[in-house]
Each structure stands twice: as structure tokens, then as C-alpha cells.
Image 1 (cartoon, rainbow, N blue to C red):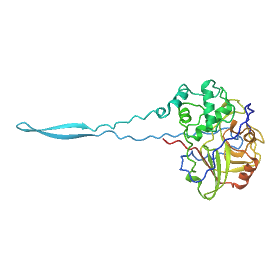
Image 2 (image 1 turned 90 degrees about the vertical axis):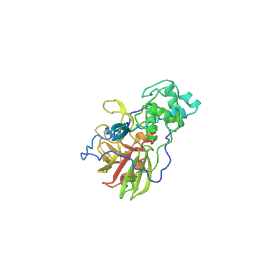
Image 3 (image 1 turned 90 degrees about the horizontal axis):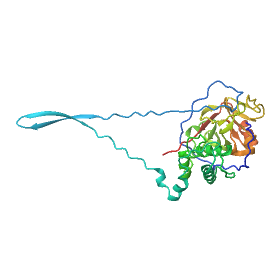
Image 4 (image 1 turned 180 degrees about the vertical axis):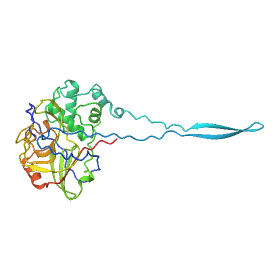
Length: 323
């Protein structure tokens, strides 16, 4: 879909290495609703949330009988509670870093850099994102749209909550040079028939047939963008989940963006399609989609459009960091 014009330095796309093999199964979102609203087009992406509620066993008290001989035996019952498990305090991860690294991040590790932020911590953030391969533009003291999308892409690659706000977890990941999450595809991608498997962490779409990876494509996902009608800037996430392709259109009409914004759309959710994006082709990762899976090359979008049958499975996932 067409993104608004953004005045930025010319980006150069930096992307992860090709992926092979399988990835451990990651929890995914629910099945798409049956209602297919084909007019919105990448305008809304639902956020999935889940809460685990572990059950904790209560401590048990045991009674013991003791006999005391003082001329006559007297039975005495005493309740002896089991000692509670001692919790070992987690070490402060910052103490594991070198003195020079702690000194560099000391004044910023408790600061949250957000869209529009400026100052020394914003400059440091851009420098560290550049080292990690997510910020190919000129460093400044202001966090622009491109900078927010760089934060989002970095957070996904490290399995962090992707909100575009560089807070404590993002600072620690940058300071410790945290590795990217696993590149293995989840088992659900290796099923019978055609499967479009979208890895948000590594910005890749894998086109599989009967469990074999046939082609891999670079993609651009939802991120920090301006709503076409309200002009409000916010995060438009691409939803995780499993769906089926229900339609394909060469030039679908969009209520928000008109015609021509989403050429060669492979439709799997009312507001999320796989399609060619002229904006992705021209500005790379400096901007983002509004939830759709953008393809950078027209010929690639045409290939996916032609080869993907109606009913094919689409699985989108984000791998979370492990402790």
C-alpha cells in the first residue's frame, strides 16, 4: 500500500541471511474471522494477547508426635511447617558487561526514546542500531519515522515486544549485542500443500510446497505509519496467526488508499494481503506497511500471485527471546 511521502536520507536495505531448516513451533494467533471485508486493505491489524496462569502449590504442615518420659509418657503433637524454598536473586545483567560498555549506556539505559525524541540518547540509539545493521541512514539527534521503524525491526529480530519505544529491554539488547532469535521455521509451515510462512523477526516470506522451501522473499511488515484518513501516526502491527488464502486480485480497490495501492494481492485476511508495494521498492525499510506483507519486487509479487492457490495456508509468526 502507498505510504505517505517521508523526507529521509536514502535507505539501503539491510536484511538477515537466508534461512534453512525448521523452526520450533511458536504460539500463533487465532484463525481469521469468516467475514471478508475486502475494502479496507491493510488498515487494521488485530493485536493478540495471552496470559499464562501457573498454579502454585501451597506449603504443607505435618504433625509429629513426641513422647516425653517424666515418670509417665505424655503425647505432644507439634505442627512443623515445611521450609519455604529460598529464591535466588537474578543477577543484574548489566553487571556482566564491561566497564566501558556500562559507562557508555549509563545515562540512557533508564531513558525511553520514542517517536520524535531528541538528544544524546537518541543519537546513541541510532549509532547502536547502525552497528546492528538496522539503521543505514545518517545519524542525528532526532528519532524520525525511519528511526522508529528501525527500532521496531530490531526489536522483532531480538524477540522483544515490538512497540517502537527504545526502553530498558532494548537498551540491554543493544549493549549486550544480543543475537537474533532462531531462524528455524515452525513445524506448522511444513505441512501438505502450499504454505506461505512469514517470519517477522527476519523479515522473510518462505513459499513452501509439501514441506519443501521453494522460494524465499524479503518482506516489509506493519510498523510506524500515518493513517490515510485521520493522518494520525501510530504503530500498525502485522498480526500473527494462521489463515487461508480466500481471494486474489490484480488491482483490488481500497477504501483507504484507492486503486493501484496493492497490486497483485494474495488475500488471506480482510485487512492483510501479500502484495507488491511501490513504497517498499522506493524507500525500503524507512517506512512500513499498515499491516500487509509487502513484496519489494513486482516480479516476485506476480510469482507469488500466480503460484499460490486459493485455500493455501498463510502462517505469520514472531519468535520471542528465550531467557
